[in-house]
Length: 328
Image 1: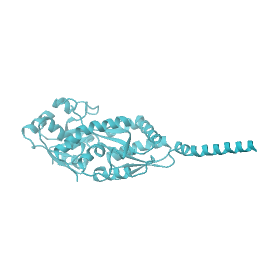
Image 2 (image 1 turned 60 degrees about the vertical axis):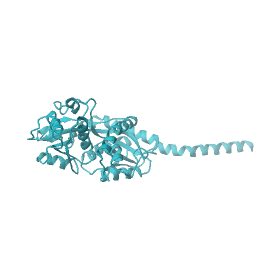
Image 3 (image 1 turned 180 degrees about the vertical axis):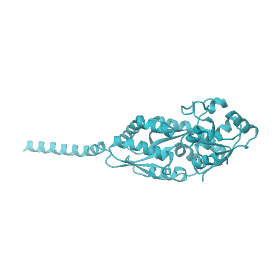
Image 4 (image 1 turned 45 degrees about the horizontal axis):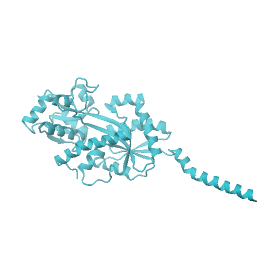
């Protein structure tokens, strides 16, 4: 009788142990369903193209589809809110750029999300290189002449950007502030219409990027003056950096993107997503396609993404506030 009782207790204990292990086993099988990737821009643009490229490669490693969900509007706030309010289970991820994470908290008095409390970084995705260009027949031959006119005749040069508070807009405003020059900003609703008006000669200059403006820059339809990157770019080896011409040490500006999930997403799930993202960015086929598109892979760890956020906020938030720019 006593032996039977001991065996019964052991069986109950083993049954209880098995029950506690079931959730762990279930989590180990993640993912068990498709992953939704929210892109806060319209389909067909540069951000959407990159997301679809990386998502397709990640799906191979995850063994489940990664489905793009475009949620454009409100300077990425619509997509960011949808991601922030989603279940923290790893089945919803977000392309979050420096507009979403750095600029918007300074540009809007109220946001439907908190970039720090609502999200955790999975890793970097890509970096867009910004280029200052002038129309083909401009009398401004180089960056030095452009800056000289901006200082001697403040506001005499009209320049286009994809919109108020975009990295393109803020890059030139920061440059002007750094050297005591002024330029007249003409905001557009996106990179394509801004570039179109530069091609048509409606505006003297524009800050574009190597994705939206790559073909026009390479073909001579517009004249590039300088790149805002820290070093010269392989696709434009003769194009100087803003820093080397203006004599501004460590001056650089980019548009960059990262992958985010809701803050409470389990560590194991976040680590799996991070591993598949890293594998995608290391894939030679993905890297080749990135080069064709005109972007640089940004294989940054969560800690590196967080460090980028801290560094960018120290530069751009004071500038936005000094300029008095708001979007609400």
